[in-house]
Amino acid sequence: MKRVVPMAVLGILVLAGQGFGQPIGTIENLRDKAAITDQDRQQIRAWASAMANNLATYRDTDCRAMIAARDAIVNEGRKEGRSPAFCQTFGDEAIAALKAAEKKAVSQEARVNLFMAVAELRRIEGIPLLRAAIEKDPYAASRYWAARGLSMVADAVLERNTPHVEAEIADSIAKVIDAETSPPTLLMLFDALGRFDHERAHDVLADAAGKVVTRVSAADPIASQMEDGIIRSLEKAYMREVRPEGKTRLLSALAALCASIMPPTGEPNLMANLNASLEKITGEKVGFVPTDSPVMQKLALLEWVEKFVKDRKIPKRPALPSAVEQAVKDIGGGEPTP
Image (cartoon, rainbow, N blue to C red; front, side, top):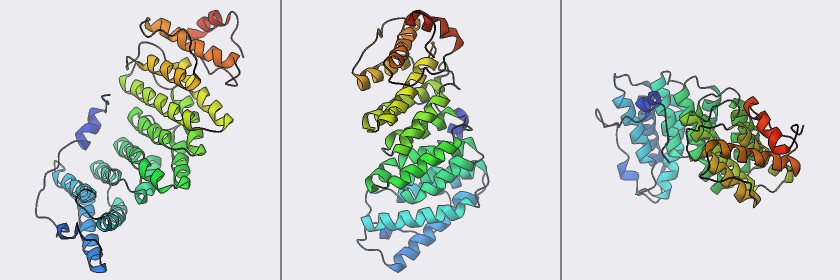
């Protein structure tokens, strides 16, 4: 599915970097070495430090040298054509260099490029930098790439079997969910949460989804895509959750989506996707027909809410837009259930 990213972000993030100026040394001769010596490490450290410093401090009108430094770091961090020993050493040194350079990166361009590099390296060692950025960075584009980085590194976190890292990431996301307003950034944060199995991640996902969906309009294309991502994350978490109370929280979040989403939606299949997700996780159906009008689809989503309340699968009905209160009364045959 095509993702919408604000043009202001794209203007900074997508410019193709070409090599400018003379490279600062080289580490190509080390890429295939089965063992990295102390001297090799020093060579890698010097190269990574110089590139990270260029990334953070270089001043030119079109940022090409800065982007070239970023691309060089990311390229060296790829596993293809590199020995495991080189990959491990380079990753360690590159993250350390970027951490040191972060203090010098004061412009928006520098900070965005720095967090792009950290994200693309997909290293667990870079997670503290990414967490700090989503919590404190002043630039929306930097926070977006930090959030995207947390999503990109999720597979490595799971491979390492580090549940405490999952919980730490969830804690950081919980801190920012009330203040963060950028749908693309929120989409990445929800995607990260949806990849984890830790109960803290599932609880933060459920609570955050219930809050965010009431703040956005599904008519906005970016917000609609974010809600579609939330649905997928909630579904994955629900299918893997083992705690009854955890399942209840996640189902309550899905009910909040049923209540809050109002047609027309920027993502044409948003309501159908939500219904399909609920059918999958519950094994049940309501009167949702994908070919029905958006209004009828909305009424069918409200049937899910009433069904969950009636069957005591959720403790209470989520807040409803005032425009649908009468519809709920009609479906329920009277006043809304408290």
